[in-house]
Image 1 (cartoon, rainbow, N blue to C red):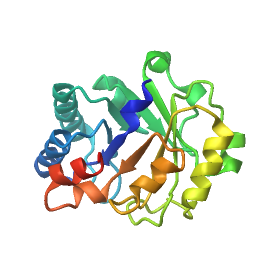
Image 2: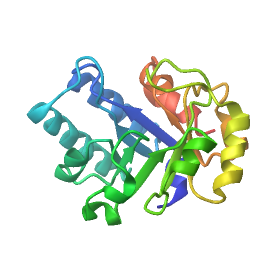
Image 3: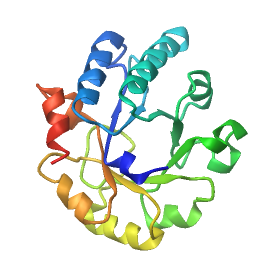
Length: 207
């Protein structure tokens, strides 16, 4: 993959089942210049079955329109069915080496939050890692303790030139510190989705 695609990585779902609102937010974020999008459909009110498939297909159409890679979080079957550009998995999900061969030519991302997890991770099939949470966050219930920019610098040293995106509590006030600490890009959720002007919020992260 091209690590430039990680520069502004937006993660979002259906806004507790409100697909229409979510599609509008995603379109605004795309207009603002996000460089990669991940569909993370989890939690209360998450879409399932046909509703999820229809929503994911609509998201794929939007990202294709803007030429932005479309990644699905964790859901192997959904990623294959909508012909996503890749998948992102966590430490407790399917191992990268166990993914179907369909993903051999797709983007594979893996969450690696510490040196301990890195040691236990097989990165042979992985295209990039997501590291964090860098700062405290409320966007993910299972995010773990913040590693700070020192943790980012350590991870960069440990992985060498492998593409890495920083995630967790990233705002307009602290995103540059992540880039200066070795991240190739930033993954953002609420600082874009919760903004009054989504397009403007995205653009501000690209300055």
